Image (tube, rainbow, N blue to C red):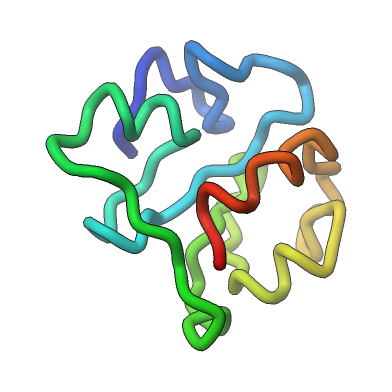
Length: 100
């Protein structure tokens, strides 16, 4: 996991709320980051979004239980299907940064 001040549930320096418990695998580098800001600060390249035909890729990590979700599964839910941890609804505002 790459990021700034990442805790054991994937919260980072930028997003530290109780519901900020996911991390994303970035399409451009296949590295895991807790947020787009950590990627922007630490990666030596621009971020690239996952295309719509890659939506079956397991690219979302629940920081509470460690389960992997496909992009489709993540976009269709508001909580982890394994442990029921609720995901921050505000993250939907950033989906365009990660997914086409």
